[in-house]
Amino acid sequence: MIEDPIINTPRPLAGIRASIKFFRYVFRIIKFIWPIFSSLLILIMLLGIVIGIREGWTIGNSLYFAFITGFTIGYGDITPQYPLTKILAVAIGLVGFLFTGILVAIAVQALQFTIRGETPLDKDKE
Image (cartoon, rainbow, N blue to C red; front, side, top):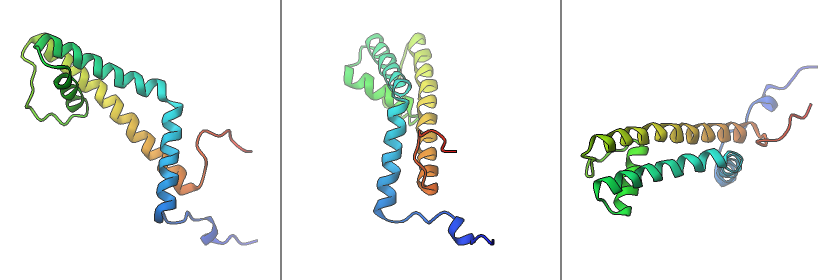
């Protein structure tokens, strides 16, 4: 029996259905790892607030600084001045790397599920 190579190849991603399926998989995976994901977000926010209190910033500016630093954008419009807050800013950057890495891994996994037509987080069907 000869296998048809066309049947076994992944279908190209096109259209709104593939996009909806991709985002559904992204949210399903995020729901699964939500404790880790939310812990990293809370840690970024808390470190930003601690820096803001020490520097005398508003809560809005503190959170703005935390997320701009955490996502490694770093505009430089708000910068810490004290040695402790500079160290905490580095900690925000490291936590931001973890957060971004997990987010990228989720997107890659969801894209693989979308291409293969699999369902994430289901048990193996053998």
